[in-house]
Length: 388
Image (cartoon, rainbow, N blue to C red; front, side):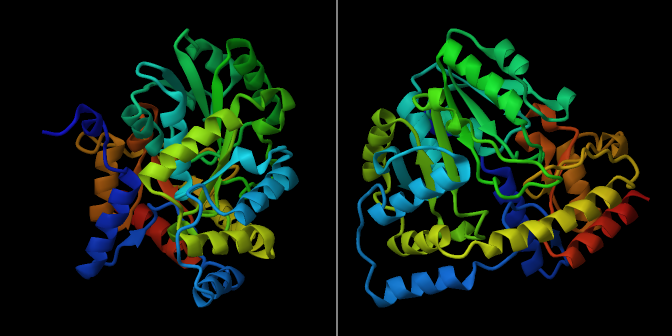
């Protein structure tokens, strides 16, 4: 008999789509993958070299369950340098990817019935992590405001049971960025109503059109209420290395580390050394990726806006397009899941149904442009041909 807890969890739609695309490729089907959220660039050589040195030096044993001190210090420096967040090593936890940082945090702060406000559409894992931690997700539909959360939206969702709000800017799946002024208004609500904010900032370096990153954790009055989550996965094209990190109030970070010591113990020792090099070494690769992503974003926006039945709000960050495709629906293909199947069968491309990101997303699909320009051009041609 399965526990009620485990029955609440659904498989990740993004990983499922990617797995299906890989299987079709193995069968000889010429499928193009625009589902997975990972850069198509290789991990920079200096980072790989650091991992090789760690191997050669025998750095292959257990470390502290919460991460090596050198990496924590590098994370502190990064937060101060790039996000204006003041923190100490005691405020840092190194985790097995960003997902574990979120899971540990929710496990530490949620009791049964506590409510978590989640702006929708939302990254697929948020709701399932909240559910397994016995919290209750309260969704706020951001589609009327071009996917941008406002303080007014947040206030309408606050109840006596509100324990936490998730911020994700730049956003997955929409690519939108919340302005500094709105984040400051949201911070005032958190101070007034005394709830935590978890700020997921893994796409922070991928900003376009002069958009600027603003971390809510940089507001000094918020230091006891904000957890800032990040990872080396997207910024340094290290998705498989599985290193995330989080900063927040020490009285919560410490028990999160206790949980991790019993759940997984330390993150991979070799990956920690690689992450240390990523954060302290040359940062040129980030700009190179961002420059390429903005070229792809511009092409996707221009060409996808021409597709019959498609409407696309221009993404401001990350590397996703999230078009409204309801204008291309038919009597048979009448939601995002069926439309995704249609594209898989007719166009031989893999995208993620918008409905996987919450009910508010069911008119949309997520198209990752973290693929080569050649594949992107070919993919959009295939969509056009399938719709005609």
